[in-house]
Image (cartoon, rainbow, N blue to C red; front, side, top):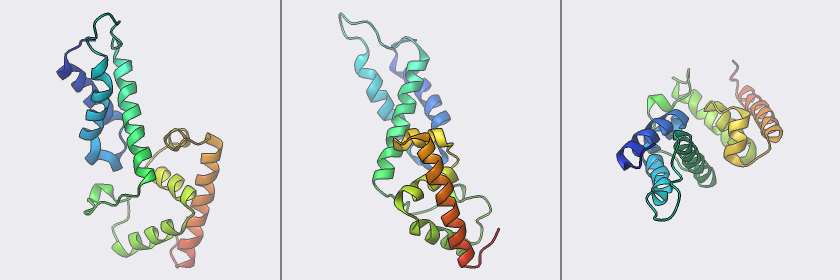
Length: 161
């Protein structure tokens, strides 16, 4: 691996694009910059071994920066001003249905809401557990119970699959 910052950035852009979930697509450039800030201080220090010798180190930096952004978002609820069609769940073309689903999601207990939210965005239990700092079994339990609560809430509103 080279010490050229432009080549490092290219590897980080590819890595972030691969690990970044769709709901963070608008933040990819920021995540790349954060990963680059982690990597660059280790380059060219006199008297030290160069820590950047493999692309796996850069991929790990990209993954860590992405997980940090997910954790930051889970601590602070952020709502986009405009929601694009790509951000909507598949089949949620009816705005009324989307509002009902969001209402039911907001009624879930916060740990279950986060687990179900990550599940709906396509995270596996292992990924969600790492992102939220939880045990995998606990995350599976939160997801399972959260989905059951969501289903009951929607059924009470007359919405069935």
